[in-house]
Image (cartoon, rainbow, N blue to C red; front, side, top):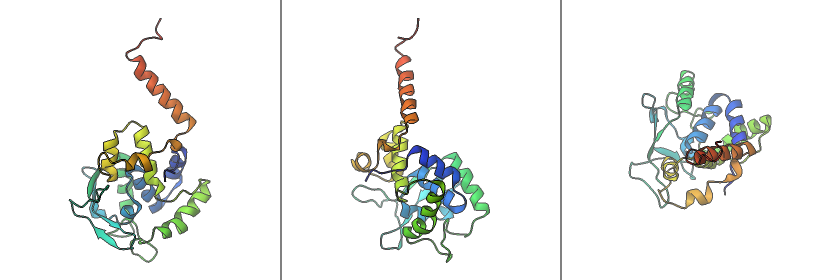
Length: 209
């Protein structure tokens, strides 16, 4: 349940992807939203001026699009939420808007309708793309686990990660099922060690002569 794309795999996917798939992956990796939420995004959900995404709907397991109310939440999840976007995502979205294929939906199938089956994206778009660039397929939903792991190991507060992902603050679900050290490369671990060393040496000047 904790398998995720590594930092190296994520970087390669974001670099090599093109068109709408690049936008889909960028949003998925950099916000950690659920696949069904990404599939149901509309242009009206984005506030480019303030850099916000108002997440208000999703494609359910029953292949229908459900709108969220501001107070809607389950036992361990908060559906409706406002997500601050990375500047890189905003810039990408603005470019994509200029060549958008639909005036309402961000992502549409060959039939001109929003995707209702994640398997269509997996089988006809993601898997061929990953095979082409030499990255192991780990499901589309794995982007969500990657986000949780990257942000947590980068030093983001756990509750902030949960807020963006739509998990209840204090829930054990995030750490138990989403955050994994498997994303880290040797270089990542070396960088972490260097960061901790710098923090240590800000107060303990043991290396100074």
